[in-house]
Image (cartoon, rainbow, N blue to C red; front, side, top):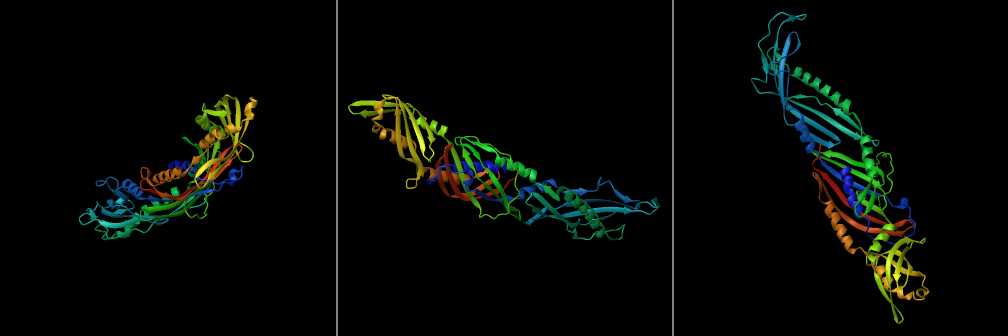
Length: 466
């Protein structure tokens, strides 16, 4: 889950700059619509089956075979050897079954005893499955699982009756001992069943879920974009079912993700119980990006610092040189851009404009730029018109962000990322349906950008690191 989370951070961070419509200046974080991420995951159980096949012994024998004997009492001794067939696995819904065929041989002898006193020597060895084909018996276990909302995994172990496919008759009993053999197998199976129930009847998964929840609550640095916080609210787990060698499960997260240039706090919270609310699937991500004004000021200053503007004042040519810029906002949802300048005049100019999204050109821009010049030179106050075209046109150029090419590039990159092997054995399959920007707001603390990305994503796990 931690690896999947890091992959999702790539998706969520890319969505932070996309398409918009104007709205009020102040919007609270709680008003951000919740994002829903529902991922159908298909896990191949073949690696687990292979692991079990490799871990379970293929041959079982009595101690000291072929020379040692098992002597349960004074009058009987025996030794045996059983080899198993490849394990057979079957899965349906939340039930799993494991079976194999045992091929066994048994050798025994008897003697006369009275009150533990030996009265005769051992009879000649008699056998079953030695001089003729090995005897066969089908053996298996079944298990069903249920995950409760509080993350307790309930396991019910079922022990089907062993089924003898061949009879076993030995001379020292002079009769069919198949039932005796099955009784011995049954006793061992019951002991194994009890051991599994003692260990796995109720497994508390909350400590592991809490670790994953803590990772979801962590703040992650995104190179070039700031910091990402998912702000998870709820977890869902639906459609847990298996068929043949595939396990299908849908994992869902409801969250209010945010990208910020300033590192936010990472509050410690307790993982909530699983929600059973049904969702249509896919991802519908609303992302809020808080861009700090001091960072925007640095970006704008990089474009305009020491830039010279030549202006005409009647018959005289004058000029100004940009010495610095500052970006902030007023109380009505407008951006304020301040420029400090030197040259023929020394002073500063404040430009006010509203950040909007131009749907026709798919561009974020600052519209209706107005300015006010403050200077120690009284002459400049009578020549505001000198700045109207040169300064405002330059500012508009550097405060406009065309998104048409971005949409195409971002959608293509997202689709490439969704449809690839993220790491060995884990492959994604999906597509972006729509990528839009839903709001841009000049707030007192930062410029707030909200975006939305919808689409489908499925994950197939073909290898599991065990």
